[in-house]
Length: 474
Ligand code: BYC
Image 1: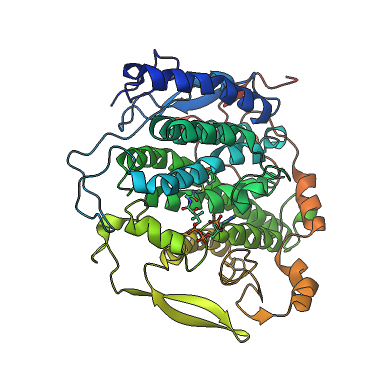
Image 2: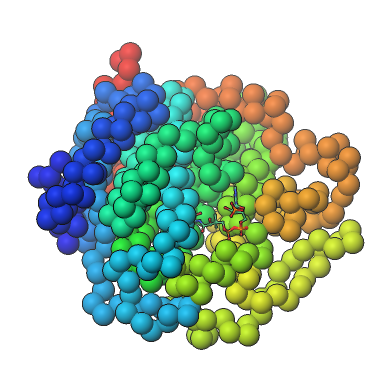
């Protein structure tokens, strides 16, 4: 479905046929642009960035490349094409035609899900706004900005739903999305991970790998929704999400690769003095970002999740591929929980354990990526294995929130945790060291000392392509 770019707000939802909605969104737009100029990438708003922009939602048009100044990026409203005769795929309404309007009895819950999803998008832009100043290459700088503008567009996606389907409450929530600020003590973002800092590029790659990956699983679950506008919105968001995950996984992989190169060249694990990041520090960053991201799936046992599912609002990852009744009547699911000083498995009603089931799919995905990083180390013939910590490690939400668990899954006292945590998560010394490496590299085709080059440039461009021009001070 092609996108109408002649409207002030690009869209493929025939916005001009609904003047009221169009006016409401046009009234929200200046606030968004104001937010972008205050909270978007600092110091780079005047640069020309080699960005992809969607011109249609099909395979041909969703990635059209060209130089754009970020404030001129055409943020808009793009939904995947409707599926004819789509039916609600799960829950109590399974098999009924999907809803084109919000079902009255689920209005509050649905709004809350959309607001929670929407809130993460501007939050990540806020978290990353200082990173441009220390980018390890023009290639990485461009990727950062691509991710940032697309997160801005994902905010538009949720704001469209709020304006189009939730009346006055929706408009108020859309305002709230521009008011909250990541890390603000009085008005923080909704979910924990989105109030953490992203102070350096290693954190950024970890965030794009682990936290954006939660986005993939949450969006895929919402893409199953019986509320069809939400499903179609999330389906299109997922096509953009793949690049964000690529930035994260390949970014960490390139750091690992460079570290291995330095280890071999200097025959040491301590590559700091050669401008690299030790594998042990990379491991601590993994521990930190993975545990924060696990919290984003909510509690192991959640009546909220059960209600979302039964009501047909939020499905499971790849719902259609599952061979069960799609209602989970009488099914059980095994969860882990702490009990009397150890961690035990417990069978629970599958409906209540939906967050844990989604977390399990996510963990399996993280394991696959970790194996690819370990392959880099193995191919360099070095003895070291990166690991994902135990799911109970450093959790703030759910069954493990009140206990201390080591990365290999031993329950320990709080005192021991305090004594040993510097072995497991980045210390201020680790962070200062990583920060000390964050010097901008802006010559085309050059890369910082601590990261290897990617395999290829964006859109088949050579690595020394001028991915961003007009840098401040240039
Ligand atoms: N931090 O029953 P529970 C993305 C709250 S990322 C703070 O366990 P539920 C992206 C919860 O709200 C994807 N609070 O959880 C990535 C509830 O509060 P109330 C974002 C938390 O409701 C990178 C209470 O604890 N999308 O797209 O089953 C860059 C008990 O809740 C947290 C979504 O999350 C937390 N981590 O599930 C850019 C999808 N976890 O009711 C973008 C929409 C839980 O006591 N959201 N709480 O006030 C949802 O589906 C659900 O809200 C959650 C939580 C999965 C997040």
